[in-house]
Amino acid sequence: MRYDSNFYPELCVVKDEVRPHLCVVSLDTTEASPVLVATNGHMLCVVPCSIDAGDTAGPVSVAALQGARKLAKAARIAEVNLSVSTTHTLSDGISIPRRDVGQFPPWRGLVPGERQEVSITLNPKLLAQLAKAIGSQERVTIRFVNDAYDPILVKNPESEAFGILMSMRRPE
Image 1 (cartoon, rainbow, N blue to C red):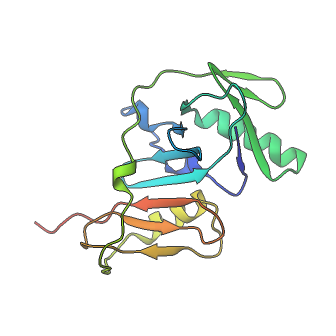
Image 2 (image 1 turned 120 degrees about the vertical axis):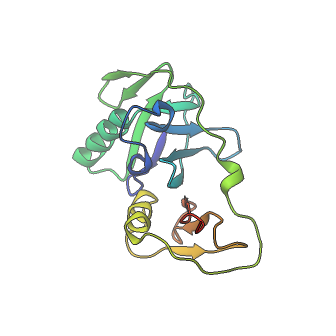
């Protein structure tokens, strides 16, 4: 599996082990174009990737992504490269076990469709972290749709990467 080193999907995972299925990035190959998906319940990151023969869908550990990124940086290449099958195998041959963390949540239903646009209040810290996760260092396109409490689509205008930022809760 390969993806642009400007993308940081690992920034969108849960940091504790209470929800292990959210502590990983998911390699999703159900559509024609494979993607890496990560969420912490407040934001969701989707970045394009390409797969190689032998790569399989499922969880990808943050440690494996960080190790692959470190090797790409050392080699001064713009693509992170990692074999993902029963184990994670870095380009230097080191293998990291691939553990079963359960079912990654169904995320496609969160992607807003074409509806009437509205504006909302959001957390700028989460927006900045999500922008970095989808590889957009200079600008993002934000689309507010339908209801002020629906998820917010955040796009990187330079690539097919995008994120979903969960809106703030409805006032009680």
